[in-house]
Image (cartoon, rainbow, N blue to C red):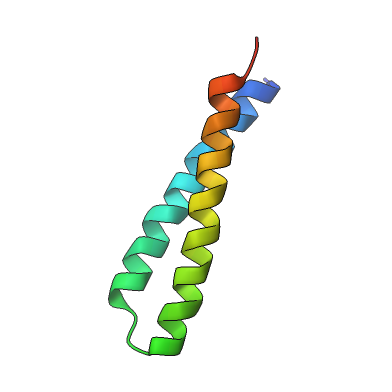
Length: 62
């Protein structure tokens, strides 16, 4: 069965949260400062995306 737009948005939210968790683990275990900064920059972007996606879910009109 094909998922509707709301289901797809919920899946995207879940995937972004999984990415956020993985990046948090990566930033806590990385050794090189330059790599840590790259991961932190990516984490910041994903955190912003999580926030935007969650807002979209909250504001979604059925």
